Image (cartoon, rainbow, N blue to C red):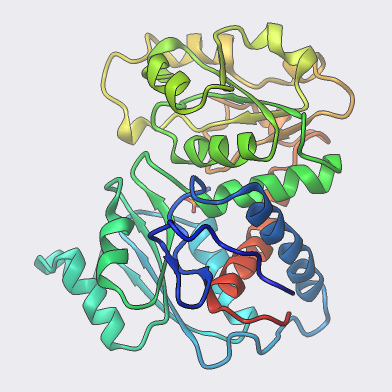
Length: 327
Ligand code: CP
C-alpha cells in the first residue's frame, strides 16, 4: 500500500519521512487521505475475519492507551486493534494512577515515553490536551476524544460504516441530531463528511447548536435546522448524538421529555426516512431520550456495526502512523 503525499506545511506531519505523525482531528486530512484510511480499513476488516486474526505489522512497537475520561468502545477497540497488529499495549486510566497524586500531563507523557511507547492514544476532558502532549512526545499521538473538541477515529469509523452500507459518501445527506454543542464526535464528523463531499445538516434546539455564525464561518456548506420531521424524507443518514448531561449547564433544555418529543429518534420517525436510509449513534446512548430503543434496534440501525468497524479503522490508523508500506 503506497502512502499518499502529505501537505508540507502541516506541523503535525513528520516532514522528514513524509508520513503522518499524529492524528489530532480530521481538519488536517485531505479527502484522499481519508479515503486511503477507509481503504486500509477494508483490508484490516478482512484480517479480523480470519480464523487467527493476527498479523505482525506492528511487532516490536508499543501503544499506550491513556484515558483521563471514561470509555468503553474507543479504549477497547484501540487495544484490540494494537494486539491484532502484534503491538505491545500499556493501559493507564487517570483514576488509580499518579495523576491522582498531582502528576502533570507533561510528566505523565514523559513517563510513558521513558517506558518505551511509540504511540499514545489519549482521551482527555480538556479540549486541546492531545496537542500539548504532541509537543512533548517523540512518537505519535492519537486523539481519542478531547473535551468538546474532536474525536477523529470515531468520525473515520462513521465514514467507513456509511460507505460500507450505502456504497458512497459523495452527495449523501447526513442529519446530525442532538447535542451538537458538547459533541466532539459531531465536530470531527463535520470536517470529514464535508471534505468527502457529503451534505451535512445539524438539527437541535438552538441552545444545543451553539454559535451559528461560528459554524457558518468555519464550515460554509453546513446547514442548520430546528425541524427534524421536515428533514426526514431527504435524509440518507440519521445520526443521533448523546445528550451530554455531564458537560451541560443548567437551563439549556426545558425538559428531557420535550426534547425527545421534537428531536428524539423514534420508530415512528424512521417510517418517514427513505427506504435505504440508515440510523447511527456513536454511543453511549441515552435510550428513551435522544433515541428510542425500538429505533436503536431497528433493521435500519448500524450502531453495533459502528462499534465493530471501530477496530478496523483503528488498525488502519495505527498502521498509517507506523509508516509501514506493506499490509
Ligand atoms: N463513541 C465513544 O467514544 O464511545 P466511548 O466513550 O465508549 O469510547
